[in-house]
Image (tube, rainbow, N blue to C red; front, side, top):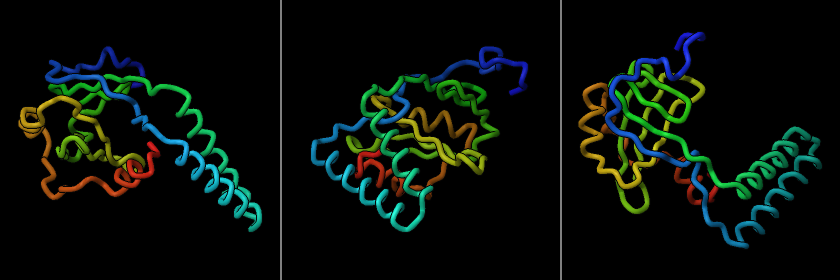
Amino acid sequence: MPKDMTREQVPLGEIKYQWKVSEYEKYQRGFGWYVAMVLLGIALAAFGLLTGNYLFALIIVLFGIIMYLQHVQEPPEVLFAITETGIVLGRKYYRYTELKDFWILYNPPVVKNLYFTINNVLRHRLQVPLQKYDPRPIREYLAQYLVENVEEEGEPVSDKVARALKLH
């Protein structure tokens, strides 16, 4: 998108599908989870200080602060839209040419996600919850513009670990 062009001026074409998604998933965490994470954080920060790795200790403390801040606020809702020219997630617009492929993992109630691989080294994957939407028409529509990655049969390991540890 050119620097002098706002998101509202980008020619999105007709919006085919749209829904709101949480910016991140907020898990219900019990008291035991917090006790375990505080103890782990203290142990890792102490290890960093004892070994002289102050940057590691600082990163652990900052991670704890971020987790606390996420706990005390509700995740903001952002708009996700599939259009004729690309997809919109919040304030970011991706043309179909910026996306490598897509795949859908649909195993309710555990996983109902739409994934996109981005042609970007820093951020290579987008995950969008399908919520109550039927994945079949969305798959058919996206297949007109993107290759469906049929080799992706399972949830990415990073997503499984984050969900198991309730870290998102």
